[in-house]
Length: 287
Image (cartoon, rainbow, N blue to C red; front, side):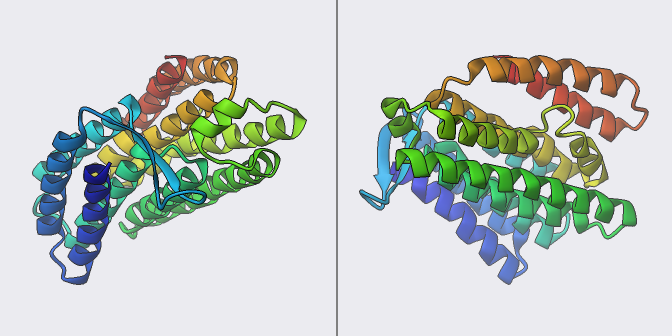
């Protein structure tokens, strides 16, 4: 567990230092190296533990979802560095912070902590899209901000309902208690809706391809390849705690087919890839 926490802290610290000293590329490279070393140390996995200790500690674990998230995040960050090494230093610092939020989400098994990192990833994504300064990019970033904010507001209300009824936020504790009465069902419905907006589930996520299409290539890589997967990760954690698999399967079918149909009629390559991402997310939900 210590190695995973060090990796997350290294990404956040180096991202901030790169921003302060305008050494975004070098800080990103150091963060990537630290992340790879830390992943190698904890890759066999580690059991669930509490950061901060009971009763308010944050539950983390090195499970298969964490391993997959870390491997994908580090691989894509390496690809971005290779592609855009001579790019803007500030953008590299922001991308490093964005990858750090994804690493934190990967090991988290606490629904409130997931809310925090999802919110932070949304804010960083909006800044990265808006940083281009073009009117189309600013409009796409505004839509991203409003809809992601709506999704996270729904998630937070749902979190309050679930916590008020169960008194816990750990995925494992929620699964063990097995509370499934009306207030919890309403809360879980709001949690699912919020995570679905973040994921880009069809109809709820039609804003996503436009936002990704207006971002620079290195930003689009992380938004499409990594950030939207945080919503899938959140839905998977909810499925561990509550009996919501049929809902996820239905969302997966609609998203897979809808994203594919919209992609076929889209002439812009980046937006086409954005709808293709939506379609692939549907297949992931079916899995």
